[in-house]
Image (cartoon, rainbow, N blue to C red; front, side, top):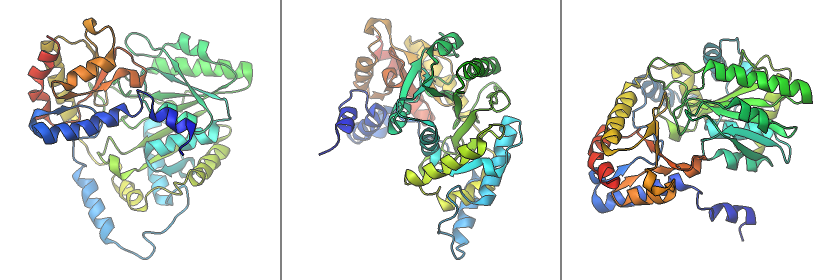
Length: 394
């Protein structure tokens, strides 16, 4: 008999709604033909991995030296940690050493390891809403509770709301920039303001909540926007990320944790994350793809196709009469449910299915009254959806 906790999650209306839509999409394509189904449900990158990565993969796979498929240090290969330290140093504007890096099985495993390292039973983790739907599960995995905090109308951080949500149980806040599902990039002022609030709180209570930066979309930005560095602004900060989105290899499950070297408990935090890697059963990140990203983490990628598809999709939604938040990065469009549906995003997404359109209800992201379109799909899918979106709203 399965546990009460798992049964409760399984029977929740919002459980796995994105994956359910994805599975329904497969069935609809079999029934109506792939060209007649408009599946925007899953953030599964449509772009191929860069040629440099594929060439590296081929060469490394052929270099079958003795022990190439064996265990290594739980934290990863030294040369891979060094490469990720270089990458993080460039992004954060501070010198990060290889000993501040822990390789992980994607960003999801990285986040679970960080939460395992930080949370005591009953602790709280803040997150600005809307947010990636799995965060709640990850917190519950380790005895914590996810506490959602409202954002401003443009989905930027509401610092006053965050300040009011802080208490002695607050262990961390997760920020995801560019954001899934809104595509919002938090400004330097947002990050600096957040850091100041957490410093003030820490000085008063003796507990400094961590900023956990979930950054798999960091490289996918539009209009020359930049994702602000957190390490220079706040000592108790950690980056969790992966190469799933920027290098289009989500199925290879390779990512890492980077701990701020200025953190007074940096060594303890690294050790705790390494231990969590073992306790949670990951043991180590995949050996093959550790070697691949060591060589190709900075491979050139052209994200202009995502920007083009975003523009085409926005033109279609304008034509069909929808309102939406223009994304600054990632590959999602967060769209307002038409007024006549009274913010019932679950019902409206079911309505869209009648027109072979598959999207993700905003309620699953803490954004009731909205729905998410993942436009990391073929251009033809977007263009062919024009009349379907129009008919669904008229």
